Image (cartoon, rainbow, N blue to C red; front, side, top):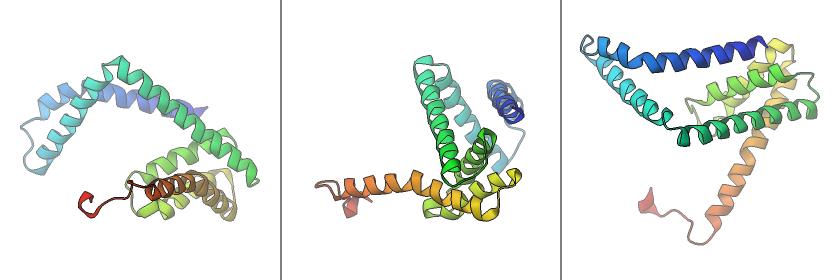
Length: 170
């Protein structure tokens, strides 16, 4: 319950920050020189696009709904795999693992994100006294379940006639 409240509070804070960002930007613009000013400009462009998008409910509601459904399915996947590998972990552990894996995969450090995926999935189970070897077993099974179907389907699609990339397409 505390983790859920914390996440909701964080989302609200980010939302409020982005809504008041135009005022902050108007005061900061021109006061910074060099790369901080360019970074500020890039952030402003991103926030402007977000604000235009968020004010269009026809686009926002389906995207938010699909995102929530996706996160719920990923949470359920974690819970099912907990049971499959014999872990005594519940919804809070599943949510923490999900959040840490998503944060850990943002930078895309390596192809397949194998090491970061395993590291963050295992790290998310440590506060729940899950032994390292069981946490790693969970991470391997989870990674296989979420990665292998995509790779196999992608490989099959590439084998279909007319679907192979040509050298000048790269």
